Length: 126
Ligand code: I3P
Image 1: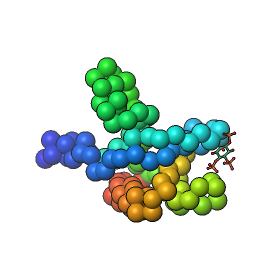
Image 2: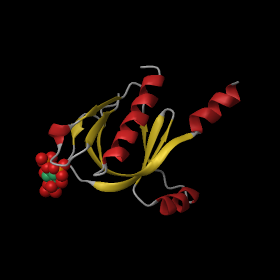
Image 3: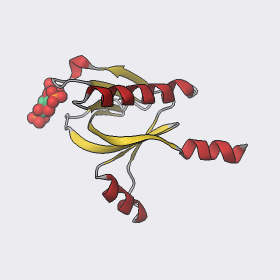
């Protein structure tokens, strides 16, 4: 049973490219800087890779770590007012990190929003 839940935690639920901007780190505001990120969602975390999936895979072998976001207790909400871009939502972590994610393609951003929201709702809040 333990083994099963460990494997479940590692299982990738969704991955793909989105535009990403980190706007706060530990509650401290950051200058907004949009860039393309390869995003990997598993049951309790999101990993952001700066590079293409291909590049990310080869970097993993050399021990290069992606930015990892703990979804336990995190919040997700649409954030129309935070950007001039369309289709932007925000993830806020317990540790006070804030990320905006965006895609011009409606169904892509909707799929991501619901996948991340479902993951958060399944997790304990603390
Ligand atoms: C920012 C950049 C961002 C923009 C942001 C600007 O300027 O143009 O793309 O966010 O707007 O401040 P800079 O590169 O000089 O930092 P959006 O694309 O999300 O609108 P903001 O300050 O209104 O967030």
